[in-house]
Image (cartoon, rainbow, N blue to C red):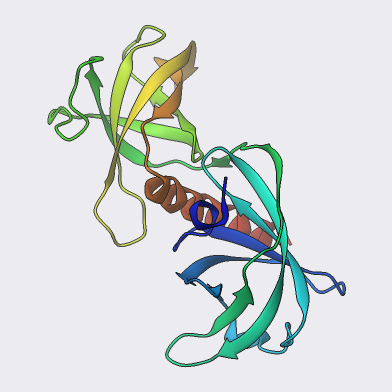
Length: 218
């Protein structure tokens, strides 16, 4: 993957100071021919210094990438931004593996077909619940038994103040469960055709949930 494709606005990145500072996760806010900017944390304004070199990890749809970059300037208004130089060398580290969080969301689902137009998913949704969620798929609890390789459309009401996300998925696993004395089915679903923007939207929610869990544990 070349640099213009890798560095995209709203893409999640992890910044790791080489001098031993605490790594932090942020998102790309701006990309131009001279460099790119990421959202900084005003509460940690002295964490990075101009001229400092950091290592960055970027999660693209296909894999995780690493590169080094130098902080060229800091802007505090209207947003707190770190401006970095473009990387000279980008290293592909591994195939992308999505972080998964245990989360219960009431969602809607509809059984679809291979030929269903992604722009016109079914309108009739049945109620279900997630067991966990990641950028690559979800575990669901359903009342009805479905066949492996079935197509489902999900209506995910993520708590980010935006319209529910509508995604297509394929059933990979079905297990019979007894929940509160009732027969239910745990369904493993892999998302298909999800845009990178929608993947990042899900992953932001997943990381927020994981951070909340760690804070509560601590």
